[in-house]
Length: 253
Ligand SMILES: Nc1ncnc2c1ncn2[C@@H]1O[C@H](COP(=O)(O)OP(=O)(O)OP(=O)(O)O)[C@@H](O)[C@H]1O
Ligand SMILES: [Mg+2]
Image (tube, rainbow, N blue to C red; front, side):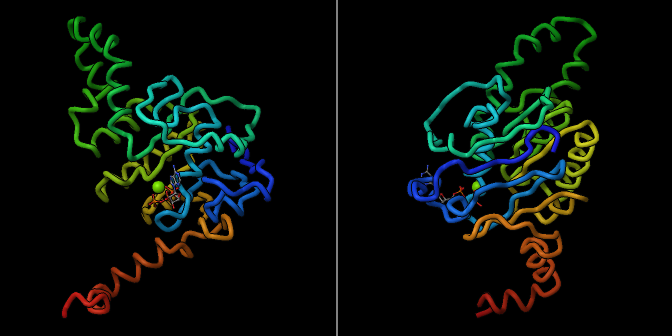
């Protein structure tokens, strides 16, 4: 779509033995095209979603631990050199904003956001009458917010459009109402020429109109319609039949 056209697995099939190529979904992945502004990757725990999003992020120039392209902090070696074999094919457009959100290292990212902008904040604090500008720009320190608030702040205050945003389970800290707000924010950013690639378990986010949804299976990635996803079908079934389900799960015994 806007910035990333597709990814290709350049590793010869016979050499796909070690992590991450031994994960069935990645072993069988040859090419994945991004046709929509919003692409979702869904699948069971451990199916390879984070591995894939991380590989795209690293190859697109992001810090493996998350953040913008300017973030180069490193707390642990959590990615594999083998990710280089998953090639990212770009379009001719270049994004002017970008963010890679790894749910598990959001704390480190929050620290970086705070440090990166502390100088700018200091200047604003010392300018009488500019306190509101500060609040509008950053919503205060990300560490002074709850997990969910920090993430919404980041999306609303720092994501500026014309961006490439790679998000791994962005719903993890969000209430249902906040997920509605996130959907609306994604839409605003898409209207400002942004591309999203999102790994998620959320049936709410997946409802984004015209998104392309890929489900990660042991045979590779398969495109699926919203109402055919497990997230939609199982949530709907559970909510319509929760009394029967808790009985079936043996919770009344
Ligand atoms: N650094 C690593 N070295 C070897 N195997 C790994 C490494 N990181 C993850 N794995 C394995 O790769 C597989 C895919 O993991 P991944 O984190 O991509 O799954 P996921 O689909 O994101 O799951 P979840 O929904 O739980 O977040 C898992 O079996 C995991 O144990
Ligand atoms: Mg994951």
